[in-house]
Length: 381
Image 1 (cartoon, rainbow, N blue to C red):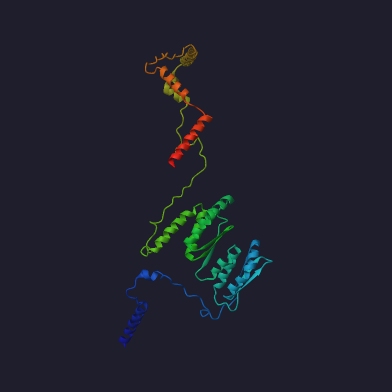
Image 2 (cartoon, rainbow, N blue to C red):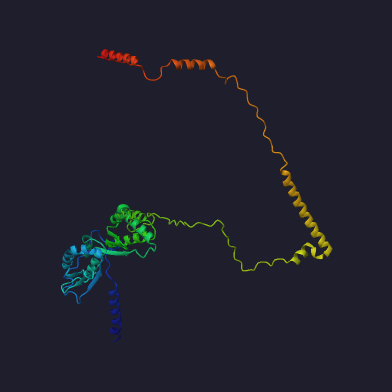
């Protein structure tokens, strides 16, 4: 009887061990399991995945500004057509200035109402219908970044927002090409439509620009990352050594005062007590002198000061009687024989200049010159 009872727990223990042990595939690398194969896409959500539909009706509404009314009125039939394909109703209320989307009994995708809500949000924020309708795709998402409250000063906010757009929209275009996203800067918000990885980079660049970091630095690092992503060996490595390190230079424009007050070092001990008049007299020995001796010393000190003052005053008076130093007289140098003027050579030059004919030629001279030129031409022929 004892032997079968003892055998039962052993069998049970063996089964539990077998359950915990999972069959491991042979010769399979962990890095292969973590990486997503190129060109792989998640299968689309179909009616077969949710044949019974949704239990309750969901709806979202958003307001739009007055200047968008004309555009929304034109493109609303296209919006309804795009949403009807996913069995979602859309209504435009021009009196209240609102757009509403709601599910129907035929709606089978539970997440399509969220995408429809994002669609009307983007349309309200000046995004065109052609770009906003892309949000209904599975691999496309959107991000609305609020930048109005990041900078207090309005002038500074406008400058930084313009810096994000760049001259003729060049900075924004470069950012769109690097992130594969459509970016729309309007008022106090930045709307972006694209893949999740691109939206993450767009948000970082926009927030850094509002923090006074120029977008060109982030664009440069994005370009380097794009090139590094092409190398299959560097995918699993850290890219910090390749990325540039930009130092933030905070230039303080506040003028420094001319006189700087240097603070004394703090000491817990009080300053030494100053010497009293009696202590000074004891140190010099004046304390033990008699009254007439003290009086005599004071008189001597006063007389010495008076003598110094008189001598200084006398020196200042005598300065007026001191003659100034005269400069030494410089004798003119005699002209050397080499530098003497040659009068004869100058006369010859003047004669030659007179003989030269100045001004225009006379009528006779012109006629003679014309004849000579004609003769030369005939000879050449």
